[in-house]
Image (cartoon, rainbow, N blue to C red; front, side, top):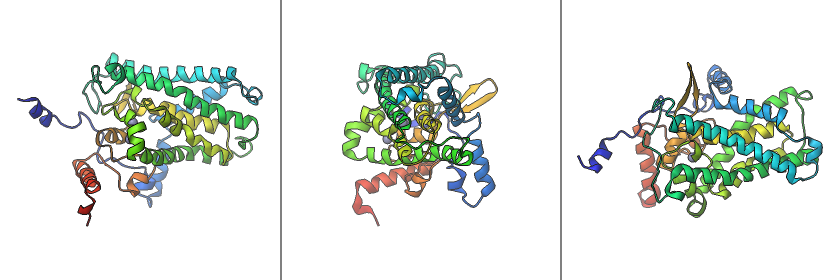
Length: 332
Ligand SMILES: [Zn+2]
Ligand SMILES: [Zn+2]
């Protein structure tokens, strides 16, 4: 059998979650209130990444944040402290997942979407090596996310960002917390659409798309300009009264979810517990490009007809969309 025939016979995915992919209940079934409440509560449970982002946020706020008095004046000493913390965090999350899933094959190929190995000899990547390339651009990006964090902390310390505490307004505090994933996913969708315009794609976003198959280090393997854009959603806290915990949670959604959503494995097995780690919705974006720009927790891909639900019909729909865009005269 020729190499082409083998390729044609290989199924597109070694594993998929239940298809079609669903959006959050408030998008798919807006009239079903009990499904909406159940879905929103489940998203904060220990089977979901959001839970761990919140835990890490609280740990950082309690133990790894310079005092507000120190941050009133810009200082490279406290900047260096949070930079070091952010480096350690990314090494722990991306490095830990890579070692467990790819180096030690801790759960074999169980729930692995695409079992092709990560590239180790390809001219597409710096050092001709996907993981080394991905690590390099992740490490270049960490100071950029940290600059956003330090800038916003400095704004809180100097009263440029309005502070609100949990004890003052617990309901407001929780509502803002609950809205952060939607805000961050919305910002990501529109930024990501812009990054797919040819000029920005060619010079910036194509760096991330070198990864057609992904591993944990791929999550932050992007051009520094994209890193700058990704974390810029924290500017919302100059307009909306908030607490450093809100800021840190927004940052952690990016920092932790980057590597976690690019593991390429649907779930991480920890004893009898399975934690949702992979993001098949985004994995489809890496394979098909012109679809699934945002997250399933926000409605934008569905509303703007760029949603690929993972099924063969979805493949056809996206291919048809691409054909129409390349040949506008075909539009009815
Ligand atoms: Zn990606
Ligand atoms: Zn993209």
